[in-house]
Image (cartoon, rainbow, N blue to C red; front, side, top):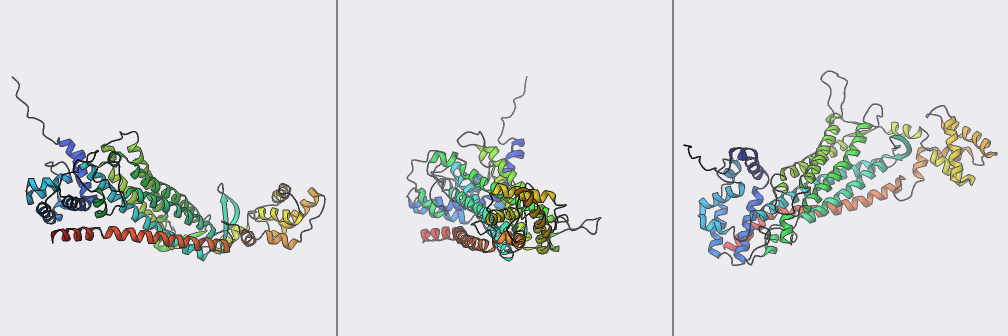
Length: 496
């Protein structure tokens, strides 16, 4: 005769260990404060809509005030409740009773509560990354302004190509950071929409006011369709996609800095505050700060990609794949990106530039041959194809990439006599001017070019745009910082 087995009790120990314990801890770390804000806003809205009586709402608000935040933050998951939401609800029940505490959950679900929590946390992450990028952009603009006349070699296909200036190179990074900021601002606008009131997925029969909770929680409008408010993940994907683009942009830039810091290049060095030595090789100055930037950017980008992968081919509805188990990955990607950006900004401020070495490299390797060919087109009336042939043959006949400019001019004159059947009319001094890296740069005044005046105008415009984004950020940060005070004032006004 078999003995009767006890009925299974939720949660199974292995489920609590592998899932619920982690989710509870994540909730304490990421969402507790936001959850309380939602409770206050929802209670005030229910009272305003007369779904709760004034006395009921006042008792609930006082119960929320009496919650022991320190106890809740320090609590260990024991399986007696499912998650942080139910733990807080139990604490509220102990304070004001089950009937009254239960009325707070009128016209809402954990579905819309959870998505509201995610959006509130993510909007803060976005603003922090935007702030870090503005700090990096400030450092880059400052460095660029110091080096509008610092000529250096630009590379294509990893080979020396043409002279440019350090400011021109840095301006490219300044500009892509500007585009990254635009993408992150757009993501913030998408994220900062209120899903509260969607309830499970179809709203409610109670006459709630979603615009009021949006206003109380600092949202700029609604995630309107209730099905999409719960089911759609594009608000999340847009944010991590913008992060990933920025991480890849900065990763390419950082790789250049690491290459330029090698002794083989020696374009730049980091000061002692950002280098480490070897435990065995006392002469070593390792630019490890930039290596840490690179790995943090790679981590951020890969975690962003992981977020996208986790949501791929999942049902369009309420589903765990895009909810509690995914959220820590989102926040770690933003945390790593912010760390990388702040460290890179510090390293940029610690760079020591070898101006003379850069100038020497810019004057070698035949980097100015394009301008020499252009000069032949302008002064000799040749087609560019023909001028290209003359300068290409000149480079091939010279012994090495460090050939003196006078030798280049003499060789060009001999090649012209051979291929054109006539001597060049252009004075040697004009040809020598064309071979100067400064001359190469200064003549390129076309919009986007490296001429100092052109780059300076660009930096002025970028500074104005930077200031506009900074003002936008300041406004958004001020709004979110004011959220607890706004709720406190609304509660005080209601209780008076």
